[in-house]
Length: 530
Image 1 (cartoon, rainbow, N blue to C red):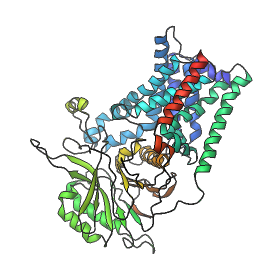
Image 2 (image 1 turned 90 degrees about the horizontal axis):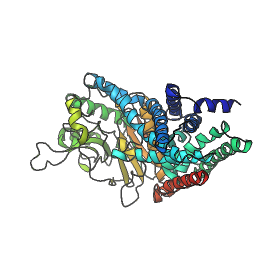
Image 3 (image 1 turned 90 degrees about the vertical axis):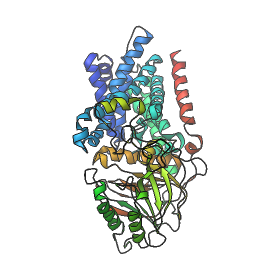
Image 4 (image 1 turned 60 degrees about the vertical axis):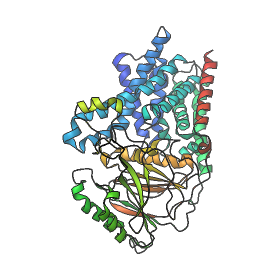
């Protein structure tokens, strides 16, 4: 039987052959991620993961853990190398300063992240039962290790395995109940279910798990078709948004010396007619610009605020990303600089600001533990702010005239499931401003958008996303893209604002169901092992 022969070749592989198999299988998982979104590819890494653990032998518990850990590390290294290769583009923006360090970002980060699936593999091997329940043990351990990856050292939940099921809008709807980490449990269990075809000793042993996996997959589709309405989402009355995507490159041209020209470009683009029904800013209620829109401090540049006021028609509000200076504390030489969202009215007054809370390590600041070492070898954070950005103190809803309360999220903040809502009143939509220009036309911006869109599914809230180079979009509360601008293009997007949906199960209980389901998977494995 071909499946049995294939399984045997993986189980009995040793040395570099086993490492290459693990690396290649993990790398295949990236095919299921954005921008390809070919979700059937998840069967390769998950099925091979079971066979790798079947072959992770040792004479002691420690030996078995180390064998599983090693297989998991190579598997994870392949997955993260294939899924995060685009990080290298950021090192080429200022190549004279950062190009030499590109191997550290492209190789060292995946090598570190691979420790998490390695831990999951190692722990799964300690509980490894016979039969199909070992699939549930693998799903639980990889799900829990992914949760750790999303929280340890400020967290990096990028390309969590559940994202393999988000390329199809109906498949991902179960995230409204279980969240991304619960979706990860299902992705691993479904993807690994064919493993027993090659290892089962009877027909029932070979086909029961794949049949259950197929039934679970069909159930996900059925739930999605039940949950997503056939009609478009209702709209918030009296709101017409204009999203401006300038497509500015992150090179020497984005400097304070060119600040006036950049503002000219924004104002011209924002007032550009796109059709007889959209003749510029006439009829628009809110115009939105991307993260870090200016190479200067908007709040300390009155000339820029005056020009914005002159360009905005009466009762039109500007929402923009901008660096903001706080108040210097006694003894400090300079004030803290925040990465912010600011609301400007038609008189050029800044009405409110939100300061980014979850900063990007190495991009916006250097972690204190590593900062001294990193500066010693000539590196700094990518953003040219002396000392890096300061972090905001709390997530808070923004009150913007004419709009429901907004949950502001700047760039990377949108990738953290369960951490995107402010405390208190439930907001009416997500407002996500970002600048993915560092990564060019690569997989990175597509993956970023996919994660932002999933937050809408999890929380039942629409998303308004404005990105410097794309992808700018309006997404409804079910994760459906209402309208968008493609990556790497300049333009404006006129759209209404979809209404929020009912609060989801995940919005009420967070990751509680994920932990409960992971525990059930583990108990099933322990019971079978005994």
